[in-house]
Amino acid sequence: MLYDATVLGAGAAGLFCAGLLAQRGLRVLVVDHAPEAGRKILISGGGRANFTNLHTQPEHFLSANPNFAKSALARYTPQQFVALVERYGIAYHAKAPGQLFCDGSARQLVALLLAECAGAELRLRTEITSVERDGEGFTARTRTEGREAVVRSRNVVVATGGLSIPKLGATGLGYQVARQFGLGIEPTRAALVPFTFQPDDAARFQDLSGVALEAELSLSSPGNNRRSQPVRFRDKLLITHRGLSGPAVLQLSSYWQPGSAIALDLAPGREVTAPLLARAHRDLAGAREAWSAALPRRLAERLLELAPPGGWSNETLRAAEHSLHHWPLTPAGTEGYAKAEVTAGGVSTQDLHAHTLEARRVAGLYFIGEVVDVTGHLGGFNFQWAWASAAAAAGAIH
Image 1: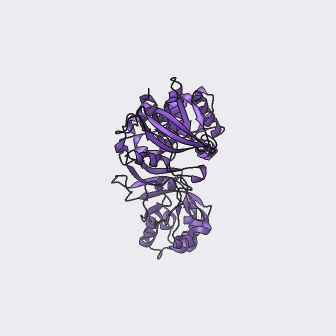
Image 2: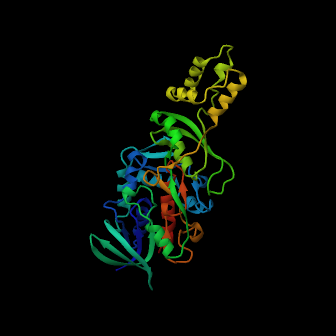
Image 3: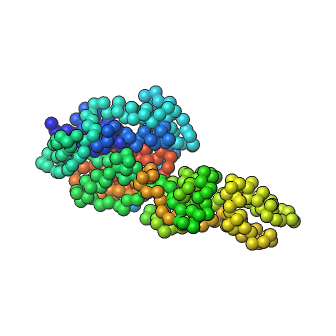
């Protein structure tokens, strides 16, 4: 049998693309080595799947080419996916402005995607051992529980995801296929991932594990994203026994490069020392009261131990204020792909058509979703890229 398209990967992008194709009457095969479809979807958003963000804009994405995602994102919008969710009667809510989650379970989203691609053939527990070009398109060799098979198709859509969360089966297959056909790969790294402490910082802070606060994190020299201005994120920060986590940290991690220092504003928008500056009598007890009014008490006391005001003059208190808003920290690293929500980098956008996600030099070969060098911020943006890139590819296959 000659399929119109073989989709490699039964995740968000792969299932959505397969559904769009099958609904047009095309013969579609979806192949995945996992035992069930949408495994990563099931754990996303705390099990409720943050399936889109209503405020999606191109600036919410990292890529060596920041303009690449514009075409696909403009042609398949969050509102279009929300309309699909509503058609299936899935109740949802906004946990934060623009961030939409299922009221029930992420399984509702997987069920929607499987229903949408009911006309496609789905082969799970099936490993792709090779993909080759032939006269009519492509030949893929597969292995299912020891049984080998040959699949022929006019088009191949690579939706294999990245390297994040290997315990769910993440592999580098998509990058291997890209290299095999001569496409470039932007260096990959763990993104949306917690930071780990240097030994000295671990000794200072790891016993504060569980302390959470709102903070603003900044990076003055963001890695290879070709931005000149500092990157800043203000959101929740969580101290763990190994380092720092929470939304603000996950956001900044996508831009961070090993060895780079970050700055923490531990009390954004607040003047911690104002109560002391307003009084004539100033002492450590008053400082504890002022620090604890702006910060969690355990953290406030630790910071006063580590960096007490060098006196009680206006000048030394202003210096202490400055340090609270520019606390320097150089992470030892990150928790890596094991804890990363996504993989940054990937198949080079220079080698793909922005309108269709088709390889420029290999007709009929498409790359969509996380495997591409387009990485969204936290908050539903990566799901929206999955939907938009899948729709772009599906629209080009006939």
